Amino acid sequence: MPEWLAGRIELGKLAYNEVVAKYPEFKKVIDTQLSDDNYIVNVDGTVTKN
Image 1 (cartoon, helix red, strand yellow):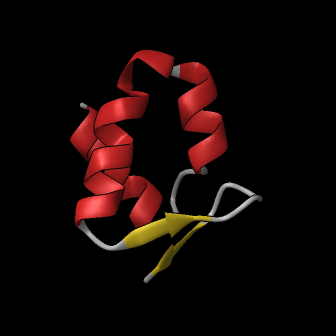
Image 2 (cartoon, one colour; image 1 turned 30 degrees about the vertical axis):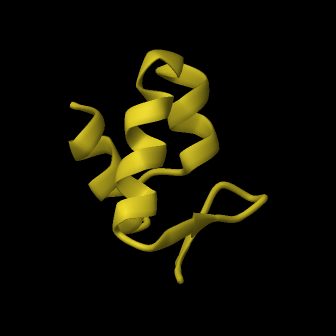
């Protein structure tokens, strides 16, 4: 599930800040997935391809 959430965050369908607030147990896996896919998290919860 965390990989799916990371994919939705990358597509802009979900906001990172909201997902991590709701599922703090998945934060580490989501962060790793975003980093592996070369995304950085912006302050507003969106992500940008690095």
